[in-house]
Structures are given as C-alpha cells and as structure tokens.
Length: 355
Image (cartoon, rainbow, N blue to C red; front, top):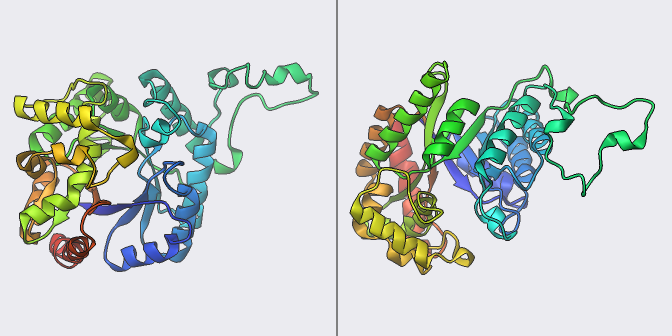
C-alpha cells in the first residue's frame, strides 16, 4: 500500500516540505487546489519535484470548474516532466474552491464531460471545438475571424508521445463512484475509514465496470483518510476532528446520503451539516467539529496508538486499496499534540507498514 500525505500548496515552503516528506519515508505528497485558501498547486508541485528524486506528487484535489481541461492537462504534465514521471492528477467536483466563488460542486454531467476531455488531452488526443464549454457570450467562435488557416480542433501537441499522467477521481456518492470507475486510473474514495462503506464502494465500482464491458480489476482503488496517532485516544481524536468534518460532509453534501449509513451516523451527519461553517473549513476548533461523536470518529477515521493505526491500515489494504492519502492533525488542534502525532506516524506507523 502506498502511503501519501496531504499538504497545503505553499510556493515558499514547497521545496523544504517535499524534502522532509521524502526523507520521512512517504511515497508521495498531494497538495490542495483551493485558490482562495492556498497557493497555486502546480507551482508548489513543480518546486517540490525539482527538490526531490523519489517522492510522488499530485493534486489532492483540483476540480472541473476553475480551470479548463486543457490548462489542467498542461499544468500537471509540466509537473510530470519536471519530476521525471512522478505526477498524478487528483480531481473531484470541487468544494472549498467553488464555495469561495459562491458556487456548489460541479454538476455530474459537466464533471463527466470534463473527465473525458481531460483524459483526451493527457493522451495527446484532440477535443472537438463543439465539445468545449466556453459560453459564446464570453468568447465567440473562432470561425468569425475568417482566418486563412486555423486549428481544426483543440489538441496539446507537445504532450503526445510522452508518459501520460494518471487521473485519480475523489468519490463519495454512488454516481461519482460510477463516473470515476469508467474514466479514471484510480478511484480515491472519500468515505472515511469504515470497512463496510469502503467494501460497498469497491463493489459498486467493479459492478459499474463489468456492466460497461470493462475489466473490474482494470483500475486501482485508494482512499482519503484522516489519521491521528497518539497513545491517548482522546488526544488522537482531537487531531483529526477538524479534517474529518470535511470528509464526512461529502457523504451528505445536499442534505441526504446515498451511501450505506446507520441511523446513528445519519443523526451525526445531519447535525454536522446544519452546523457547518465554510469559513472554518477543516478546523478542529470549529463549530462543526463539536458535532462528531467519539464512536463516529473511531470508525470514520483512524485514531489511537501506532499499533492500532497499523492494524486499521492493514484492514483497508486487505480490502484491495493500494493507496491511501493521509491527512494528519488539522488546524485548531494542539501543536504539541500534533508534533507527537507526526513523530509517531513517521517513526512507528510508516516504519511498521514497511516491515
């Protein structure tokens, strides 16, 4: 199982941060793409790629709205060239990046269409002008210029012939899981660490591929996880509480859930949604963080001493997950406790998973 960590996109700190993460034994580093909350992810990843030799690099995650598919393909392929083939493109429907533009996540049809175009660009193939979603009241058709010659379609020629960047789709609901199963190299579930929920999601993805005449094992499966490592389980819970509110909210983004959910968890999620403050996104000292119960955290996150964390990761590996992207202590948690958690995660958990 690959162990990746998620970080903010900081151009100033990217090189130093990447060197430290690589030295600590992580397989890769993902950075967020949320233009109002952090720096540019591709600048950070390029700097990280130039400063490291082994570390995998990717977005965790970008979205299908704030950048055209051609721009996204060019940016991540540039990172891939700088890093000698170590880049991946993590993408979802959008959350905080769109919220700070006054928008909800992308519509399903737009998201699937974007994925098709993105994959075509990444393969060096052409995308028809008619398929490009640029409103004509924003920019009229090229044909109106009456040029002697013009490109017949949209294609990134310099990408053709090079190594293709893999696409990983962050998915929580059944419709996005199905879209991801058809259009990605890896589905990254954002369902927490609950074994039964993840087993359901893997089964759905495989069924979708079988129904489409595709090999159910033709893509990989991974997950975004909140992990708090500390000998005191209550302290461990406090480390992940803020980040878990974000991932838990994905299962009930529009007030209902299509994911297998117990009555008790349903009540927790309803309380979480009604208390969610996007201005305190991911914070452990936020109003929404107080809504999560100990039982909910223990199942949806991985918390506790090192050996317990290793056991939980092994359970997920046995399900068929070959990659996890781990979010550790979030803002608002005690910095002293977070430092202990980071040290144990590197010295005990990562080392234990490698042994």
